[in-house]
Image (cartoon, rainbow, N blue to C red; front, side, top):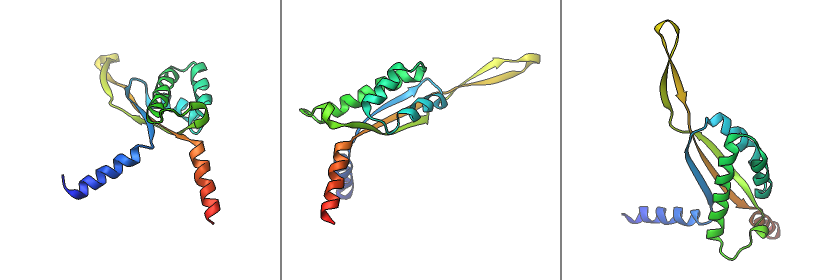
Length: 144
């Protein structure tokens, strides 16, 4: 690996140290159904998002709740000794992308066949701390 690639890789690695995320790949639900619940929790505090997902009757809510708990666990691994209550975490970004599609055939009248598309999706959750944003805003105000 050349020096330029190594420097770029080190910069990417350093930037990922402050990103707390979790991914769910090939979730066997259509992206449209999952986006409904994703839109509800986008930008909300983690406690509020967990309560909404816990008491929702949608199938995708269970999987998003499990994914959110995984993202919180990833935050705890990177911030040992820090308390979750004081961190003031919120769902910074949640993306639902289309995954692979299984194509099946279903018989139709008069010898025809209709195609059935069994969709899946990929979900990415990124958490951030509101305490960090407040500290950055305060530093910018004192510098001006």
